[in-house]
Amino acid sequence: MTVPVTGNVSVTSKANVTGNAGVTGNASVTSGAVVTSGAKLAGKVMSPDDVVGQLRSGMTIGIGGWGSRRKPMALVRAILRSGLTDLTIVSYGGPDVGLLVSAGRVRRVVCGFVSLDTIALEPHFRLARQSGTIELTELDEGMLHWGLLAAAHRLPFLPIRAGLGSDVPRVNPELLTVRSPYADGEELVAMPALRLDAALVHVNRADERGNGQYLGPDPYFDDLFCLAAARAFVSCERIASTASLLESGPPQSLLINRAMVDGVIEAPRGAHFTSCVPDYGRDEAFQAHYAAAAADPDVWSRFTAEYLAGDEASYQQAVQRFTERQAARV
Amino acid sequence: MSSPSVAEVCVVACAEAWRGDGAILASPMGLIPTLGARLARLTFAPDLLLSDGEAYLLAPADPGDPADPGNPASDDTVEGWLPYRSVFTMVAAGRRHVMMGAAQIDRYGNQNISCIGDWARPRAQLLGVRGAPGNTINHPTSYWVPRHSRRVFVERVDMVCGIGYDRAARVGAHGIDGHGVDGLSIDGHGAQFHELRVVVTNLAVLDFQTPEHTMRLRSVHPGTSVPDVVVGTGFPLVVPEEVPETRLPTPEELELIRDRLDPNGRRERELA
Image (tube, rainbow over all chains, first blue to last red; front, side, top):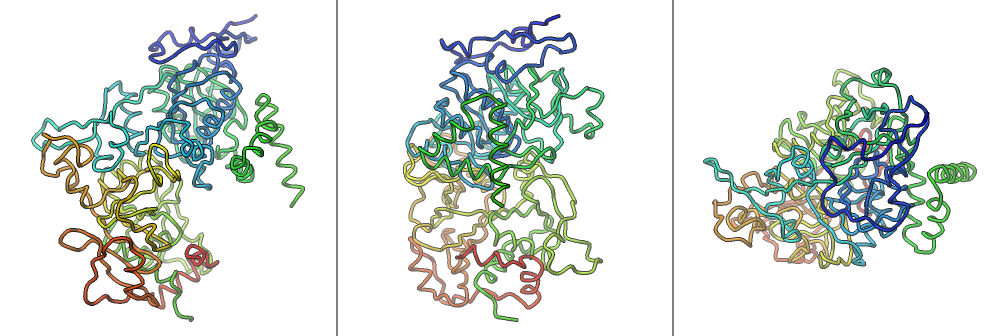
């Protein structure tokens, strides 16, 4: 028996994709329907390429995680293989932003930073800013949080002090203030809702229905990204049975529930080279390799040919070869 | 015991920033500020909270335990959970004193870590604003500058991330950026929690304890003269008639720094 799984099935209960979505002519982004086999699979299980099939050029896409921590890199790599372009990326930015920017998929980045954590500056983002190839909405980290929270709560804005007096309003002239209607009369930044057309997050475990579990120390803002988005896609290290989730962690590790989620993707090592503790830490050797390659266009083209030209399996195999070469050197 | 190095004087000067803060989150950025915060907690500021830079609050080893010299991991008892969303709440609640870096800082303490040059197409993209706007509007802030120079201490910063006293005084009075919209005057309400404590550098300690809240030379480190600091600062610095020398580490502090907090001497490399 085959069960057709399409995006339309899974999103009917949520708002339609809004705004700036424009379908490109590229075949790889218009194939929304996929077929999976086996009655056991629920409607939300899909592949990274299925996710890309539900995205469109021009969309605003939120990416979970933080810096170089628990990023949905397998989904990012799927976007790199697609024809998607003109994206607005909302992120506590790391190599997700760097890779998408380097591949020319991004029109605008909405962030407070783009960092690799142990390497302070993301090299691709830095180059793109210095060569003027991307637009930037630069926000205080707390403002980004508040914008996601406002969107998740379906509010037009939330008041916040962060930003007052700084140059953040100067470089974002669309930001306005609001005055407290109460006796204090305080003037605050009216942080507008950061509504997303789609959210991509990566967690340690999920079930087929979209319940997602993080097992590391920090949930980051992944639940807010999902709630702020018209469609949310959760990749995970392993799809597990619902009953087995609490064998891995306490109830409060079940950060994401199925009401927030439209697609579940099993992507082992899908956060690589960012951290996904306790399954694995950041691959510092590979991250350093990435950053060094990014600094030189010729080296970078060899890097992309070796790691990013093929599918996810070939990426993971190439990383395995890199790790073996490193080990042989020691 | 050998005499203290400049790095060790800086560790103690950073520690002093948190004196009297009580039970608040100390958030040091950089190694020497981190050593300073941990030293403060082991000595005169025992109530400080410190995170591991990820999501845990770490307490020092139980004072009843025998000391474990040479083991920096002896400060690794988890006493709390502080994911980023909770950090933002602590920021907004004002239960925090951060010591940030500064690529540029001006006489009022406006700080830039975002980019150098025109923001629209910077000559050098740096960290981005990160949490600096929210930190400075919400709770006490200090700065650490490992290389005191006219490139850092400038007339005007290229992008105001952390706000200085002049900007703070105008918050609420003239619109969102302190110099734009008329008709929103509310007497500077928005900056009621703004406070810049100290700027610690490899040469000196500076503060803003002047009538105009402009930067003042508070003390010079051993081996540094007042003219050294003045020449290395790209704006007129308020220099009192008597400038004391920065306090030296006590023997107990030196022992903690050398044997417990930084036995491998990484502090010296931050000034190299």
